[in-house]
Length: 139
Image 1 (cartoon, rainbow, N blue to C red):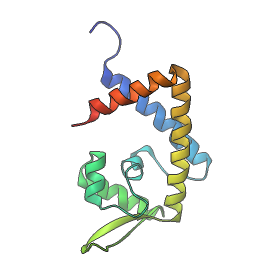
Image 2 (image 1 turned 90 degrees about the vertical axis):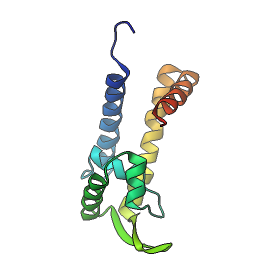
Image 3 (image 1 turned 180 degrees about the vertical axis):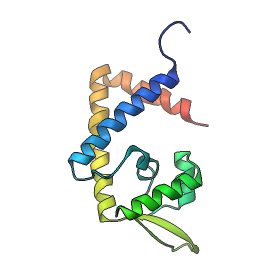
Image 4 (image 1 turned 120 degrees about the vertical axis):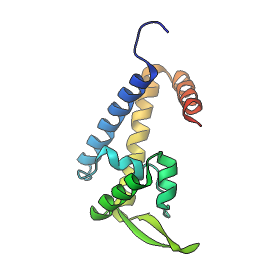
């Protein structure tokens, strides 16, 4: 390939810009204690709860990293651990009221960011971009 930045650098810049906007807006809407690293949990958790091992698998982060982030988010009031009804030995990580509020706001902010990206490059081009990106990140 000639010239230009490689796809890793481009992806990193896009992620950085996306996260900066996401977390700046979340802070403005009452979630100032959240940091981009928390996205490894918050972006992958289900409203009804998710096992830590599933969060690790979904995010691609080590279980120890996810455990630390869950501890932080629990201390901040975003999550709580509950027994898993399907396996009493296991725990589910469940969003609290504050966590659910963040999830709703983050989904809206994400949609606004993506709509702006689509407007910038054209909706058909953005749809192709997302499809190709999805193909590239699948194992």
